Image: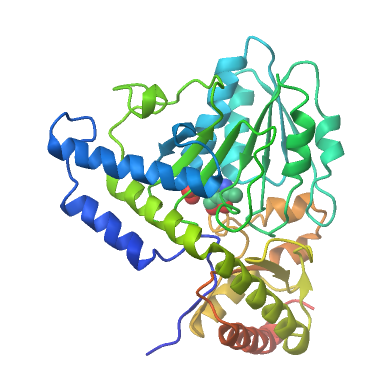
Length: 382
Ligand code: PLP
């Protein structure tokens, strides 16, 4: 059988067997509409409420503060647009960072088009945003601050804990964290935090489910209007199978998270060591103290895309920047904001790990990487 080493886990993860089982059971057996009053409706509602309790437990919040969405992007849109609409009477200014996922940056762009003002704080050269720079961007009319926890391209951990502690003193400023890449792997801070966006498919759950934490009592206009599901916060018949899968994934992380993070740290260290010993000419774009599941590196003068395909030929699956932007020719906006030179940006690769990867795979992937770089070097610039 052809080798398959999947190192693109920040793009998406393979669903766990128990996730597939929970989603399949919901499709096959709990097919009622959760709003129906009969037995089948109640069974579907039970599935959703159990999943809500599991998501809440993993995040450390109350079940009633969790609203299910179709994924991280919808949660982020609901958080940003919902806050802007609910609090526009107080101000029109939003603060975010230049290294956010497109789901945040594009939503902010949309809000600008409809009259809001957005400040995008640049990161330091290591990809980490200085909390003081974010706080320094606040104005009298700032209503929202949105900062990601873990950057999806570099693994840089942003100072969301410090920001939460500081913003707690400013109750009129709503604080949203995009925790899509950290959920399950890092404790997401809750102090001073009003909204948190989550996604199921990054934690070995299914695609099509995510969640938004809305702090109890916070005013946030819903994005979707209709039948009033999710306590009026997100209308539409919920996607029971995907939500069931998200609940199952959260149960797995509750039971195995500590061990999983230990494994991630071990393979991260092993990969860095393999790079150091066997892969000449690389340049690390990730900070040394970043999240344990993401390593971003560049081969200056190479095209990342060419390396991705050459690695695929050897059964190793990675991305250039983020999966969503990996087909764009402009290079990564994150690396650009960090001040990375264009030829280094173009030659960037992202390796992202799951607890199901092994140290042996890191060794194999490193050797494959060294081979493709050696083979392709004569064809590349420099
Ligand atoms: N935010 C971050 C940091 C992400 O990495 C992603 C997905 O790549 C998203 C948001 C969007 O999540 P989803 O794919 O569930 O819409």
